[in-house]
Image (cartoon, rainbow, N blue to C red; front, side):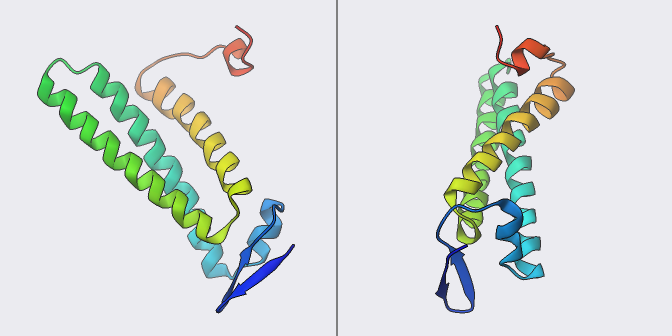
Amino acid sequence: MVLRDFGMRGVLMFPTSFPACLQAFSKHSTAVIITLFSGNLFFNILANSSFKYSSASPTWRSFLVWQIIGNLAGLITVLTLTGLLHYLPLSLVFPVTTGLAIIGVQVVSSRILFGETITTNQWLELY
């Protein structure tokens, strides 16, 4: 793992495994990274759920309210992604956050909130 020193902490410059990335940081930094990943997942689910509620809104006002909530949650998602990029390389952060978002939206939003089912073939992308 190659690190460049920027003051008191190192910044990862090349892709590496997730556990190795976490080993390079203090316990405080690790807690921040886990919190940012969790926040990213939560606000990604909130944003996508809000847009679904918005699409089913019966009035212009409720449509707008859900759009605002979804866009604010999306903004926080981008901010958490930016925070993660402060600690970890893009080659690690992007696939992890994207994968978590896909699973989170499918399981929490689609299935639990909206009662939508996804078949095994859809999970495997066999249509």
